Each structure stands twice: as structure tokens, then as C-alpha cells.
Length: 279
Ligand code: NAP
Image (cartoon, rainbow, N blue to C red; front, side):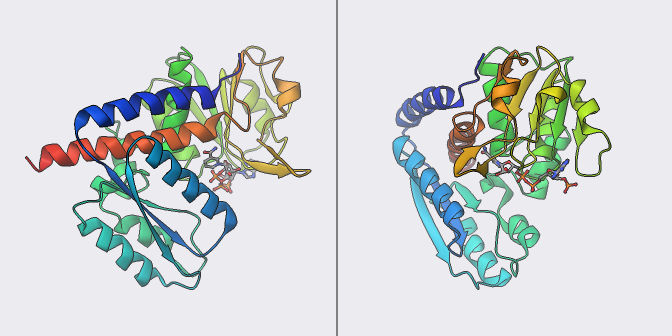
């Protein structure tokens, strides 16, 4: 089975648009981008386009590539204080001179629709999530939409970044999976991966996951986005693994669209919570 993230996200965006229209709310998302990295600009454009589609207003703050940590934090604080703004997304990565940890911690936790603020990560890890990071939550949604049970399964996550691997491990654990997280210092990753009922790769290396690393019938989720011979590919050797896996996400059209749909859903959730708080 191909886990079609594009179709799933399209469906969710349609439902979300209707829910937003019915709510009478007009949620607003603000993006903050520093510098002119083409990939970051493309991701921000895609997010604004998705906002338009589901009737979420969007504001884009652009700062120069040489902006300081203080300047980025000042921009974030203005958005924190703006009553019109429900969600704030700081596009990562930030230029080297900007302290990303400080910037992320400066986002008001109740507007942190990316779910990276230490408060939100703490809530997620304590089993009471408020906002969960969009890529991991989008993966959980895609699994659920395809009736793939997680409880009692052995999930192996390749990668331990703060935006994918770590929060995904927490979400899987909260959903009663037994979770193993691998990283660059893990010996014999292939042997660990072969024990997975659900194998999720977020390493960022083309063809990292080979057929020898996948147990027959495993569910394989490919988070990676890599360029190979001018083409966009994931971490998984798709052609070799698809016949072994019981279900697999394609790249493109798998996890990526789910990330954006989840960001829209988190923004609407924030708007609903904020409208309740203001009553
Ligand atoms: P990251 O911060 O660079 O983290 C990569 C992780 O992979 C690290 O934990 C690293 O281990 C591990 N790793 C690297 N080389 C390895 C190796 N040879 N063996 C074992 N582990 C290895 O990247 P990220 O932000 O998590 O993103 C990962 C990939 O997902 C990228 O291709 C990115 O573009 C993609 N991505 C896609 C979406 C989407 O929506 N589809 C969203 C986010 C990211 P250490 O911690 O030991 O260094």
C-alpha cells in the first residue's frame, strides 16, 4: 500500500476550510524568515499558499541574512503581542549568527504552532501535548488515516532531531508503541531497523534505507528530502523496499504535504483556543 500523503492532506485541508468557515473565526499565521535561502523561501511560500486555500490570513516577516538574534527576537515579540496573530512560525534553519534556541524560546508558547518551544516539547514528552511539531504529528495522522495501528508495535525512528526524530518518538510512545531511536552513533543500524514493525527514516541521506534493513511486511515512512541526480528523493530506496514493506510513503507526495496540512490545523486550533480564552 502506498501511503498517499498528498491525497490525505487534500482531504484534510478541505475539511479544515469548511470548519474554519463555519467557526466564524479568521485565524492568522505569521511566518518569520531570515535571509534568502531558496529552499526556506519556497517552504514559506507553500505555507502562505496553504493558508489562502483554507481561509487563514497570513503575514510574512522578512529579515536580512545578517540579522542579529536580538533583531529576530524583537520581531517575534511584536507578533507575540499582536492580538490578530494566532500562530507564529520561524522558518528554520536560521543563519549561523542567530541563536535558534533563544529565538524558538521567545515565541509565545500559546502561539507556537510549530511546537518547538521547550514548554510545548515538555508537554508532549509528559504525555499531555498542546502543540506537537507538524511533521511528526502529520505522520501520526497519515498512519491513523490508513488504519495502521501503532499500539504494541515496535517503531524504529532513524534520526533524533528536535523537529522530527525526538518529537516523533514521543508521539509514538504516547500512542503505546515501543520506540527505538537511532542516530549517527548507533552501531549496526541495519540490525535495529530490521526489528521494526514501523520504520521511520529522518536522516537526510538518499538511499540510506536499503531493502536489507526492512523486515517483510513492515510499514516504512520516509521523511527525508534529498537531491539525487537532479531529482527529489527520500532516504529510502523506494524501488527496492516497496515490495518488502506492507505500506510505504512516496517522496514526494508522502510526509511533506502532511506537514503543511498539520500546520494549518495547529493554527486553527490556536485560534479556537485563543477565542475561548478571550471570552
Ligand atoms: P537533521 O537535524 O540533520 O537530523 C538528522 C538526524 O539523522 C540526526 O539525528 C543524525 O544523527 C542522523 N544521522 C545523520 N547521518 C546518519 C547516519 N549516517 N546514520 C545514522 N543517523 C544519521 O535533519 P532533520 O531536520 O531531522 O531532517 C531529516 C530529513 O528530513 C532531511 O532530509 C529533511 O529535509 C527532511 N525533512 C522533511 C520534512 C517534511 O515535511 N517532509 C520535514 C522536516 C525534515 P546525530 O544526531 O547523531 O547527528
